[in-house]
Image 1 (cartoon, helix red, strand yellow):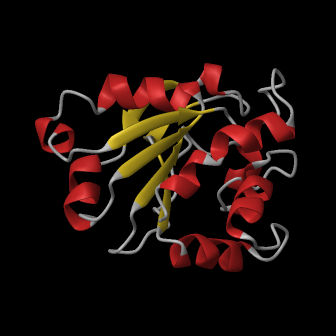
Image 2: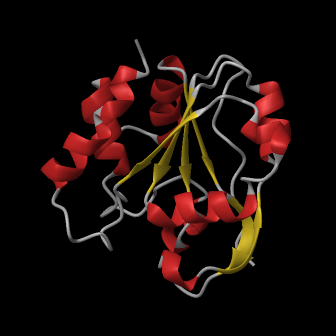
Length: 166
């Protein structure tokens, strides 16, 4: 059963970006957004002004320096392949503990509709999380499965993150 990775975060993170569950290539490499056709790192590199093809450790460091945390909604679940629509038997990560140790997070950005849907299904209703006064934003998925938008259109929508870094 695929499992989420530990969050990339620091106690002073101000933004949390949530995916759904790592895909096959990410699981093989044990890295977030490792599939070369996923545009997550290219978008983040553009927004934060770093080379998106550096090592994963360096990519994570750029996120942390910008006070951005990265995690997945689903802690474990079943999924043949990498399509989010195939995720079943999902169990959410422990957001109550995460938010209690990351008190400066003020905005949550979902990388796609599935992450937002699963968060609403499994996390909303937990009053300890709802009382965090968080701003929620669903962004277009950076996955190549989201072929309805090209890179420039996705990048345009993702630029809202910059408003929360000021």
